[in-house]
Amino acid sequence: MKSKICDKLGIEFPLFAFTHCRDVVAAVTNAGGFGVLGAVGHTPESLEIELNWIDEHVNGKPYGVDLLIPNKIIAKGEMPSAAELEARIPPEHRAYITDLLARHGLDVDDLWEPGSDGRYGENLRPEGAGRLLDVAFAHPIKLIVNALGVPPDFMMEQARANGVAVGALTGAREHALKHAEAGVDILIVSGTEAGGHCGEVSTMVLVPEVLETIKPYPHMFALAAGGIATGRQMAACMAMGAAGVWTGSVWLTTAEAETTPTVKEKMLAAHSRNTVRSRSRTGKPTRQLQSAWTDAWGAAGAPDPLPMPLQGVLSKPAMEKIDKLAANGHEGAKELATYYVGQAVGLMNTEQSARSVVYDFMQDYAEAAERLAATLEE
Image (cartoon, rainbow, N blue to C red):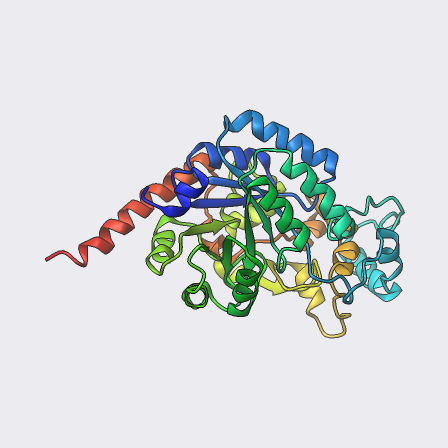
């Protein structure tokens, strides 16, 4: 494919796949796209294992790593430890979750037992993120992405020293300008349709707005993200000027995906209106499957979700219990089960391999490009 970003990264097709599953990373990269591993949930040791496995299965083809490094935690300048984060969670929030799970028939006796590994909070702090970056840069990655705010200086410096491109999630034109000024190479322009952390502006509006904003920065690339699950959508975004597309949700229903069987079943049956933008998982607005969990946090009398990362620390043990019991057929847990997914879930109706999804994108893109070209023929 004739594409500057393909030439820059050494790929055949500018389809970027964000996933927490190493099998999806390898399958997409080997099929000609670009796999990106979400690393925020890893320890340095487990990330090393995952990246070694990917290296062994992609035969030198390019891939990337994605982290969440916020500009601030709780309040500007504060970097509390995992134990300090736990101590800041109000008792009434734990009580609310305990009551919610109990009302759905879940055993809550061991819900708040000590023993959390603290990774969620630790990996959002510079020290924890730095350890993950050290592991990532020890491997032949081609892209490092910060999915929450402007990449910190230490991330930019390491990337430059290792010759690795830097990407950043962008949900508004003002974000794009800050990233440009920081020296970011690739913007993931994510509309409100996207799964996970997302803003309020649609992809169709946000992409051209950001492209106009970064005109003074010709070295930058913009990838469209949010609600994209087909090649024809990819063609539409590239017709607007995007260099490619960044996708996440579409990989959650693939055969290789890490998605729990209960949630995958829900996704395959869902329509685009079955997602909700909620702060109930991380403390920042994330788009996810609507469920009894998201309904409860939006109900009258519910406590206000805590700021990031406290809400993530709070919800983690509950969601782990819900997923475990749902996998064993517990009906109450199935009602509560949810996961991050975008409005494209309405287009994700069958389980297929990640490789076949890439090939479907390629074929659908080619057909859409032909239709568009035909409108200019005499």
